[in-house]
Amino acid sequence: MTKETTSFVYVTYILSTPEKVFEAITKPDIARRYWGHENVSDWKPGSKWEHIRANDERTVELVGEVVEVSPPTRLIFTWANASQASDPASYSRVTFSIEEYDNMVRLTVTHDELEAGSGMVAGISKGWPMVLSSLKSFLETGSAIDVFAKPKAA
Image 1: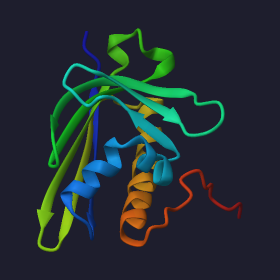
Image 2 (image 1 turned 90 degrees about the horizontal axis):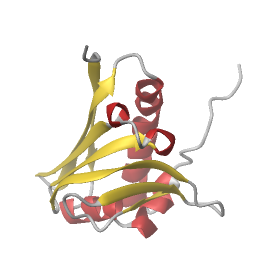
Image 3 (image 1 turned 90 degrees about the vertical axis):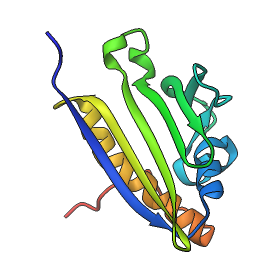
Image 4 (image 1 turned 180 degrees about the vertical axis):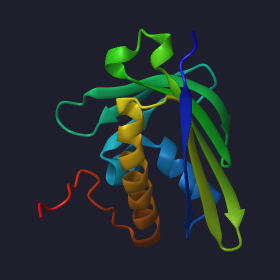
């Protein structure tokens, strides 16, 4: 029996260039500034990808494999919690599509092959909008937002 899957798609427009957006996703020293994590890989198809918390513990929180790299317009990799890395069924897929759009970039992030109703869906549904808003702020103003912020209690 195959699991039911779902997708999450987020589109944003950033006053930047495709090159800068691609670099912000793939360069650990830039990603840590707006994401609080580093995306670590040599960015070659078949290579390992790790999402490492940018703190003193340097915890590897997510892992995957690079599927496709076409700088600066497309990047695809698989995605799983590090604790579930040995379970092939736990992997989902993230696609970054970066296209010039007049004097800006249209960034579309598609996270698919997600198990419907899973904790991963709940997490990324909150996480991607925060991270991509921070990326936009960082590239446009030089200042990221706090991606670890929590709602204020009522």
